[in-house]
Image 1 (tube, rainbow over the protein chains, first blue to last red):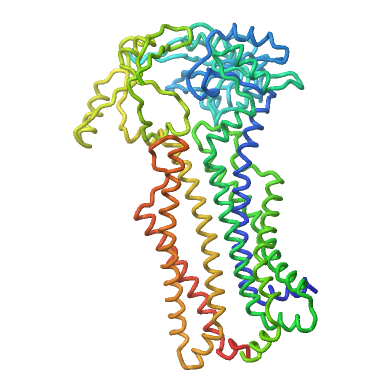
Image 2 (cartoon, chains in turn cyan, orange):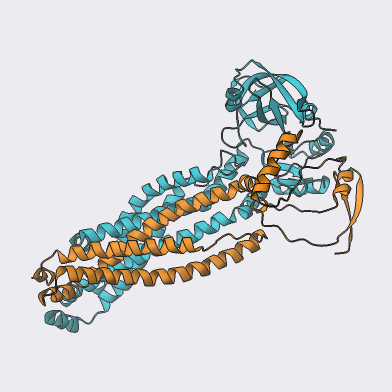
Length: 394
Length: 235
């Protein structure tokens, strides 16, 4: 009977109910987006860091990997020191730089990374084969297209440019061994990977510098204790574990989490106000009806349940519509934020996880219950005789 | 302040001793926001010698008399220069503000969603408000007051509610804007303004809320005035 009465009440004012459902749907969409924003970028960043199993990164002291142009000197000595720790099973040195692929149209400037192909964690090979010699490189599909080249072709690549002479320097011929997906680069990168020693020679780096090290630990090793050991043993570097990188990201992107919290709260409040107003007006219009029901013996609990059911029904109908709408708007908003300069293409600010949908649905159901509290209390506590008399006079 | 520091370009490179002469305030540069870099300002020749830069510099900042002089100076430099290029400061600022432009586009998109949500909310509230006065409207109509007059009075009432709400909203917006600036200037340690309430923003918000309020009031009133007065009484 409860459901029948609640449905009859909502169906009696179709336009009003439809408008309320639409209002709740927009609020629910915004709420889902904000729940996704609050947790999505963190989950997405963690996924990106852990994708190749490297759990610790070493950067020059006081910096984050590739955050500055600073480099770590004496990489060979550091690798030997790291090799002494039994918890560290692989060390991948990475050097970042910029190279110029020469061509008839002025050439292409490419992001270059120097790696050890045996332990690299920066790219996934797509076509061709991996780097097998000092004059070989794997390139991104975008660089291949921009250079009008194919796998197996040889490129003329320069490591520097003398502005005074307007001439390239440290030129070298590099064979394209294959194409690869570069994991940490922004979308559509013009990138190439080559042996570390080749890049050092081409960029004219003195000594054996690297931009960062990526470390893989043995299964069961405690990343925090390895991190502490590294910072004690090698004071020139900062060791960044996945957890500490996430903390840094949390701090840098705290703005988005705060925005998500504020807008999520506002959308929930708007939803509660909308439904509470609607159900209150609906109860006010049915005071006589409610008084009659109570006069013929319908319990106060049933009245309360019916009114609250109306609120929850509007909330859930709006939420169902809103969750679909939220996914569409999240895709659109993610497209905007993915244009952040230098942001790895694999990072999603709005990452859908089923948990987000359940959290949003739970919050909206709770909001529906809360929205029904006042009108339900009003309906349940009205004086029966006085209300019936007032209604008869009216 | 006054302490001596030893600075080097690389951990094993040549060192120089400097005295901390002053602590400078961060500049209002969007590209520096959220970057926790330590900065040391030293004399040009001292840095050139420390990092082995010879007589080289990374860039020159050139002050000009006015906008026309800037154009002439740029043309002259670019025609005569060998190995470097002149850029307008404004163009460089646009390039370094890309992050903020993305955030700005994101805010616009969120703003549109919020406007849609508030429009539906306003429409719903006005509909309820007018609907609640069915009996008043019926009584007015039975007394001989025309449907057009009733409609105009309801629309006027909606406009007044929208104006009052807008005034409250502008005050609330200004207060929130001040709080946002105070908070994020502290978080990012920058004098940048994160939120600015301009006359254009106020004008747009008030106009939008007026249009939405009046439209909502009109729709709700028209719906009510089309129903015969006795039907509004439930007979």
